[in-house]
Length: 251
Length: 312
Image (cartoon, rainbow over all chains, first blue to last red; front, side, top):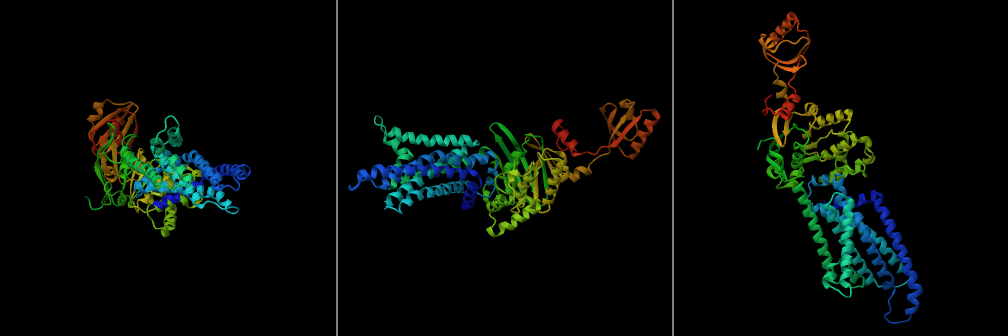
């Protein structure tokens, strides 16, 4: 049942021009960024560090900044995807199709989340093709690349979960999009304020989802970071399920 | 519980904050029956149907569908039910084929049987021609049909329709009513409406709701059968009320204004006496028409005049 909903959600995204437009724009921007980073690497970094031991390679100089750029773009884009899940359904009054079908709220929320994640994975896979194309001409640090991609995947999944919850709170998609963008941006600012020199705070850095992503980019795979993301996603999914159950009580 | 009851709701209450939308409502739907919930806007019809369809939790009371408690086992109970809300839950960017296929899957129809189920639902709702067009481009009447098709695609025992003909043009209304009557052959149907002719056209039984309470619950046949000899008479030179009442065979006369009266006769001889008297005394009889005790009068009496419940 979860898979039925997930597959449907994913397919429906591609029925509307939204998914295609989004993929096109995101990939265009990332491709430009990739080109700039490559250019930068070839003309500046490579000549300077040629022949030195332990110098930053192409994975550090190109792939990591590219994935960081992808994360920033996803932060702006994912609220536009998640706003559709519940807000738009409530606005169109189509949510009652799902709530009067023999489904539990858990199945419904997991299905929706999986569908969204599926779309994000497609976007991620297409992005990953850019650094992978480098493998034709040079050797990549596969471990670092894999860690970076995993981190990006977890980060975007956390965007999706948070957006899903905020979208279940309102029946105006625009408000859902703005509030989830706000929340995601707030977590980034939290990281920045936690890192600022005068008022550094380990708690703020820990709470922000961005900090955990950066260690993945450095090639660090820490189970604490993984646990953070799983907790983050789980919390928002449980909140969404509770919210749906509550809707039936409140009417 | 009654042996053939498909829906059995007992002592339903629903509060929105302080406001009580549904008050101590009992409802039973039998096999093969079309039940109409009739009431003015805001009487609690939609809330009742939302509760019966499992979209709204009752504040108090119990609902059983096909003998399964809806609140205890919602998943099992909902399998026996199709629900069309006031606004049909459609996705404008899909075609009816895709949409109905998804609905069938949501109701756990095995993948191999989905196509047949969709074809049957489309055929019953006369959607064959538009199966490949986008729902967003369909007319309102067709969208309503897609909504109904969605409610019957898994051949549930009970179909719940919330104001199925609202906002349609007269021809579409007739088509949808025919469709509902057609559905009643295989399903039991509950529908809500604020239109009296609709109930008379399609329902076997009617419950009238006023301010969240059931004030009337009868079979329509009973209603049709129980009419006394009621006539509306009109005169150009109206007599005194006492003159009318004195005529033999007239049980009562109620002035309606402008020389019109509603008269109750004891039998056919009463009518003869009235016509006779009208000719002899020069009252100038203008109209003499039988008045059926229609649902409309019952409804008007209950809703606007607050007369006692069920005084048919």
